[in-house]
Length: 188
Image 1: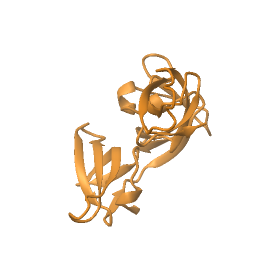
Image 2 (image 1 turned 90 degrees about the vertical axis):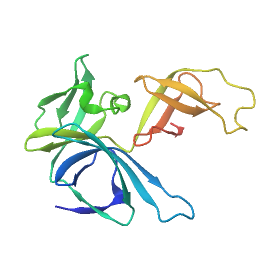
Image 3 (image 1 turned 45 degrees about the vertical axis):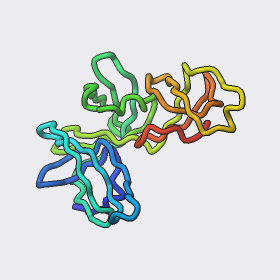
């Protein structure tokens, strides 16, 4: 098994912690100035029992990555009861329940390439690309002079995800969004 630095852990990764396999839901780098070193705040879910846990891990610590089979898959569509993915090698289709994706569904557009992780031939996690491009379908109107201020407004995307965007973003704009943090990066 491979060990990685705590700073390399991303949402969707599978790690071994306390002799169990966990799926990372969120991972944030935190540095408290003047009060000790930096650390990673990691929210994770046990793939067997479904329990969630928050851990503070020092940035210099190494974490054991779980041995998993990684398959390149493509997201096809949602049929209302689940999300359909296709294996890019065998063309077999796999349906995953909405609760399996835990907040990742808002980043899925048809034809998005993802990595599905399997542990003992059972799907246990989906790893999204670092960024996705989404289309704004509903946002507040422009504020005159909005480019000069650092203020943000909510914008609903075509996948249903709400992202805080700068004032100059309008309906129909295509934006690049970070899949780890859900933050606006730039116009696409």
